[in-house]
Image (cartoon, rainbow, N blue to C red; front, side):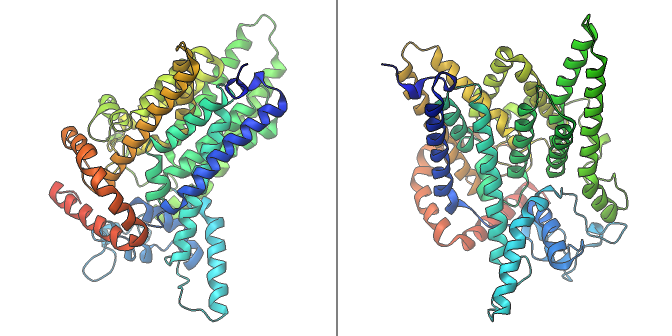
Length: 497
């Protein structure tokens, strides 16, 4: 008798399909709840800028980032604060504000969590418990921020799983989701550095692709508007996510081309499509207004990003090979599971071109943009952190590749066991590598030495990791301070600011 759990979902009765999905989602939820102790309510580095856009308006009711500079971790604060304890003049913009070029999208997503935390703190203080400061820096605020980040990241993974199971069997969608969850750069920015924007990026891009997919056959005008609002959120979270819009762009070209070459052109349908796309772009523009307003307030120009000017990008000599294979945070060399995921995405585009080609085009456009960015390696990055945005595409590609490899085997059960074992090996390798990066056994910035890294994986990580994991749960604050000091020392060695 065939195992119903191994059948494709579409071949199962409705009740059986529902039971399988329910079981898989329970597995994901259990993993999520068990992983919550890994949540690290730490605001550091780029996260200082992202979090400031939530804290300053909430607590000080202004875009005044002085306290955020002063409360920042040493490697962020020291270059920006002078000996007099005030921000250095070179970080003050022409409007009198402190430089903050980071996006405001994460702050918008954190705000519901921070409002609850702020209300709780104010209530506790009103009831006679003044020990917790209502300043946005105390533990309730940081925990709310970190919890919000892990919730958004998990929501992105759940969306990715649900979209993947449209095209692969349930088990492969589940394994693909778990694989990218733990064998990519996502855990670092979901748990360890939750104040950065990448986990929010994974969520917002996943939401966009899911809604694009659900409405791709026929969109009402209101659906075009909603898709535009989601796209605007996605870009507000992280500017590079604008490259994802290549997917609906490819879709639009295909639709117009199909109508123009048809002998029976439906001009009304073409006109409705055009109006919908105009509304889509208008909705994106509306979502970008908060970003433009904050740029104007901080820099005196709505179109000043504060990032490296476009004229200084690597347009003529993109770092394409290095982005993928460099020992300096190469995407595939640091996180090899993503190579399998990319190959799966290519295979999916060949098998399902109407959906897969726009997705592959978006991934390639994103890759092209990062290849031209001067800091393509992400500086202090685990793997190439920019690509966390494409988590949903990696989940789908990885799931497709697992199913394709299993389908090529003679024995499905043995193939599934081999795939599971390989997945666990990739996850174990990635966890060990993340540990090395987080504890500075390998440099957090710049290229690493592979011989040293492999030696550490085999000889050092198994001995040290258990003790450090205990410290992570029992003396996390002092451990973070020690790691921060190591980071400062390594930056001095590299002569980085």
